[in-house]
Length: 476
Image (cartoon, rainbow, N blue to C red; front, side, top):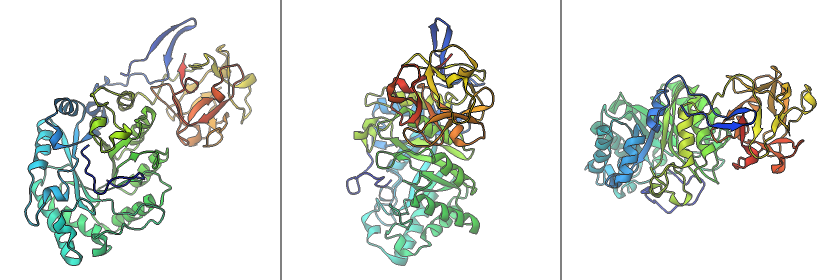
């Protein structure tokens, strides 16, 4: 965990299928722009739904909250993986040098195992939450203390932990792409490699992960620096198995649709990837679904962990970033995640059909039945003409006339949405979400009727998703 582009107190602890909706209509049955049930029956909990694709959907657990029955009930029911929030960190497990204490860590571990969940270990080497005795060390003494700590903790849990965050948050924020200036970094630039080699020797069966924040956007210097390190490690045989993306999305570090590219590029290096500490300021249902779909699209994405159960349990409770309200009730984001895990935001019926605006009652239309590349789409009275018949393909395209694609002419607010000859670009691929929004894969923006217009001839553009009725669509 780190600053994640928002201020925080100094060393503050983190206590803190889909059924198609049927609507009667004059012209027949209209269904929301969602997927048909997948081949298997849809699951009703997050962990079970994720397990259908061989993934986990996990949660960070605080030992002192397990006595809260609402908290424990939700955690036991919904998730199939557990990460200890603070209980396996350095200050908790070795408060005095050479004197390990696993009381709190074992409480989390035992609860997880008793409830049939795998466990992620977090974290072995980190500049933060070091006990006072470690903070007072430097040089070779600190280096040896780091190795001894890895051996002690991993030895206690040898063969029991699925993944370990071996090193946490070693790169600096900002545009430098440099390592963070920490006491561990000052022991020598090879300290991360040393930590991973020690971890492999301590428990050869555990997946060894590097974990960091603000590394989800592929264009950021911090992301590129982490990528260069992982590539170097793989080339030289340093034992790294996975990379964790904390994914604390907020106004200072927002979700970007290139997150999928980031996951794909790291996976291409030969490591697994995982979303390790997910929370999203405001708990946007669309953004949560996008993150899940990004993981599902990458074969080497092991799974997703949300950082806390309810908003009141979040280290950022003021941002209401989780899937459950304070009283334990499910948010719209929960439903969006469950639908995505069950396959609910990928493939609506393949046969052609109209796409009708919820706010306008009018259809997505190619003006004058034109076929010229670059023709901007509009709203128009529904008449079932060929210029209003859209087919969603397995590639994520929306096709009209069989060979023309719904195409974004740019990636910014106000970009024209047009028809264009299909060529396979990401600007011609769309996510059809369970809330009725249609989101461009390349831009992350929503299909939008300009100005909230509802009249014939209202043009169609890309715009930031707001859940307005001019951005929600149904398929007839």
